[in-house]
Amino acid sequence: MRSSERFIFLIGQARNRLFTKLDQALLSAGGITAVQSGALYYLLENDGCQFVELSKGLMLDKSSITGLIDRLEEKGLVERKPCTNDRRALNVYLTGSGRDAAKKCLGITKEFNSKIIKGMSEEEAATFAAVLKKMIKVFS
Image (tube, rainbow, N blue to C red; front, side):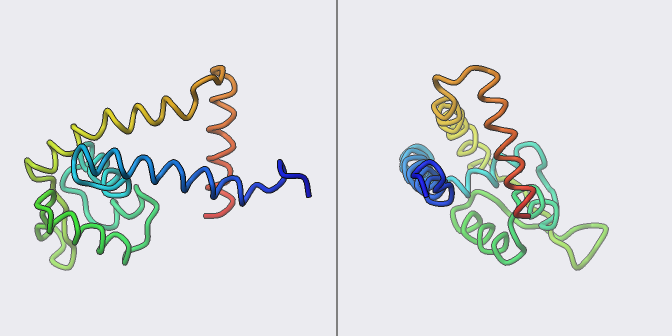
């Protein structure tokens, strides 16, 4: 197998390096990890959503979302409130600190997104995005 065909290895290495650097930058700026920032960014657009919606939006299972929200709540970045329509459900809301952390870290995430496609043409970037979306669909 040629090294260019070792896609699992290459994707894994790229992911590990990307998230290590991104986590370092986000922890330094806002005290949150990349995964935690994703939840805060989602809540910036969907504040007060239910756990189920957040789970789907982040493509994480229920137990992962519960742990993620636990950690964000411990940091004072989100709060859970009972859903008014369904007593069994909980809604997740950003706190003021959570909103500030998300806004502080959003610029860093945008910088990393720009670095990922640096040197690519618009067509190459679009193809790259399409390939990644296809992979997500295949393995979902």
